[in-house]
Image 1 (cartoon, rainbow, N blue to C red):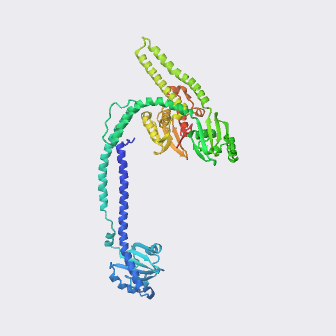
Image 2: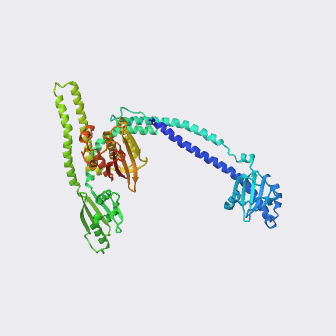
Image 3: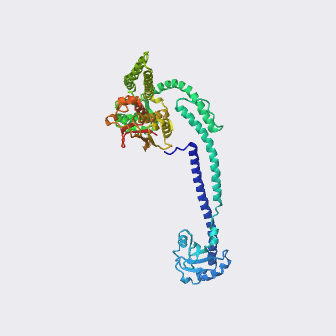
Length: 587
């Protein structure tokens, strides 16, 4: 297995790659720029000669007289004495060539590359061997209305040297690259020291011990931030206790606001709506991608829609004091929603959707939870009590005493996990509105969970494949989403077995949702259990689950947390053998 790169190595490598690419691009750009500059200067000289030649032809009216040999007298005054001049008519017939006396023997030049390019773009250039003289030339042609003037310079070592690009700047860039590499080494060394300190700090937090003492960071901005993080930790310990009391008050207040409300203009355009309205609307329709305007298309609200259409076409009655309104109760999936529509004087109106089953559902949940909790607590409490009663005896061997203490501790840990899961599930189900949502990068949360459980995963040789984009942003609660992925990974660790694979990927997205697949190749579940594995305290194999330390609430927490984020989750048998969870999260 390849050794994982350190932060310093990754930082150095990334900067080195970026600077290398930048250097190469600058090198290519500068080389091409210099090459084009020298070529354009060279062609400019040939173009000047071509223009001078054309002016000579125009001045002496050689096109009318046909006395093109007069151009021989022009060559003596040219800046370049070795320049070859050729005059070609628009049909490609050579009218004059300064180096060929018998122009009648010359081929038609219309298909020459430089002539064709001049025909299309006005000017053209080409380096090739002349079919007439057998010498290599750098040709330049310019098109005029009645003819072409082509100038050419012998393509000898002098011309090549003139077009050759100086490469001194390459050595300069190489030196600059070496200097940058040296500076980068110093910078990454300083940065990696602070990162290493932060990593040690995070490891202490994950272990539950907290910082053992004051940590000294370098005297820079990153070091200052790191120092503030450690001090914030202790402040948060105290603030968390105070926050729990305030949160309880806030939860009670938010739970009372279970009405979804939306205001519409007389044209049925949304003016204002809240999140609860969209959520209740989706629950009534059974869909998960509706907007507030879809309230006018849901079949279950046909009577409300009829009332709205009637009021919008009904003439206004002057002096009407009682505002028109209607209300009906809609049942959907064992849930009841009171839907009320109220019109205002300006024909704008509001639609209010209230989940009226909440109190009754809460009663049933509490009743069911009470029975389940009593049943689940009975086993560990009875075991602990039995062990402690046995240990009260004076004749218990030391080896048995130690064994019973270990078993009592294990049952106590299970009891603690059970209470913690019950608390989490209760908070989600009864005070879900109190969890604030914020934009966050889902990959960071997954990475944090993966690192938290890495020791357990490595001990079981579990290979994890994560295919989630780095900058994927959703609207969510960090602690709840952490619980979702923690419980999914923990479920695979407890029931997947040795040497399995975990595959987590984003396989689809639409306008409002990202869709994810979490699969492991270990714990295959029969079809009859798949529809119930999200129920509280439901276990596929009760004895095996208790032996592994499961509470039976992990997947229920996952389901409720995802639904709190406006998504859905299902389970199915994985095609590669094992279990696969498909779920969605709102963008």
